[in-house]
View 1: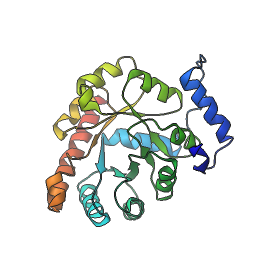
View 2: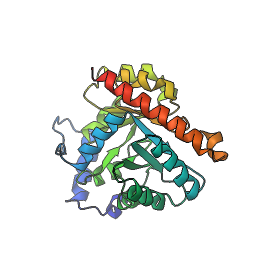
View 3: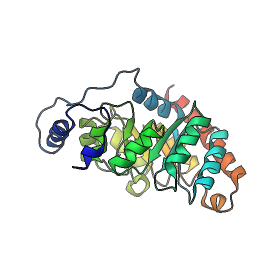
View 4: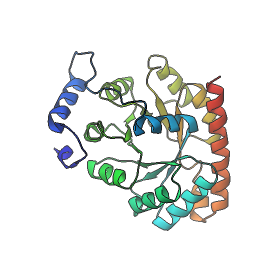
Length: 258
């Protein structure tokens, strides 16, 4: 199995993986095989930082220099949670440098589909990993680490399966294609206990609506890292978009807590 190459400090990984896969697919037990992390764990703190921000900025770029400069513009604009897509050239080097230069911010890796990429992301300082689907090798592999894994889900069955397998938060993707704000609202009725991140096609003006309907945060990609601004290296525009998004996220979170 690919999971064997994911060498984090795990215990009886192979047997745990089989138990989890059995649980997700056919078990009738209502007892979760993985206990919740301590409220003082890095994973729990990362989850809280994501909730406090309301916005996860998602960056992919054609080269490392562009990625670094765009990331700095967004971070200087007020973004506190930033995800680097692993398909970005030299993504792990970019991640390491940003973690070093912005030690108080929360960094993660996105579109993580393989255990090796998960391992390299963690070594580079990622505090969270995000996928467009639920990759069981990664979910099991990080279950005893201090990294927060955010698996991608689309249906109610996928949501409950990921949660039962140990996910502390899920990413609803592709949310715009599924109904947008209305879909999040519908999902939160039966799953109010499961934190959700909304991802795909979200604009800054919709941040408040998504969080108002129960999303813990939204993922913003082109809304911050505008394609034209990226191609023209217009980092002032990225800074401005990031500032606007960060403010909208903060205000939406504050309203949701009232």
